[in-house]
Length: 114
Length: 110
Image (cartoon, rainbow over all chains, first blue to last red; front, side, top):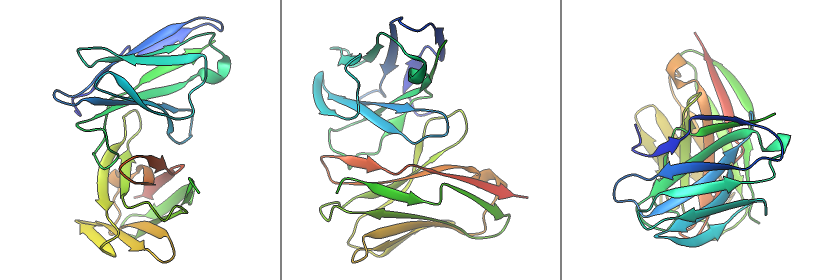
């Protein structure tokens, strides 16, 4: 158990809808990363937050947004969902902001868009 | 300059054999090279990492070999076991960014 929690575990929704994925980092970790993993694909980095501030942006679509709250949990909002958004969404947390820090991954949220 | 190329995409090895996964990077500023292991239905977890000041790092049956001049690094799994069956991701980066490889699905046949 990495200490990172993600909810919900599974999410089934329809095209055009909007969903929110939630991540709680390990106790003491200040940084949260979001990743998308499509079927049999690699990890696509979406966005990183550190202590409430956006630190780095990857291949995140304009339909997607995220934020990190004062209690350090983070939410990833996906809107106008398309079939191609079906994927596993992982968050990871680290103590510091730099990439040298080990990333602790949550169990993921499996999103299915029908 | 930002890519990390990982090969092979998939690999089948007999139990007891050596599994080898290779990665190549382009940005000479990269100085951190971790490998993550992901079991089905789980998130990835750090397996082993290396900095370029050494050419090899060993932890149990897992070894990273690093060739700075060739800008390549590889993961060797000695005496591969069925429990090693997983997807392996290499990554390369600096303190400011981490670029991930596409992953290698490793299957160890009993």
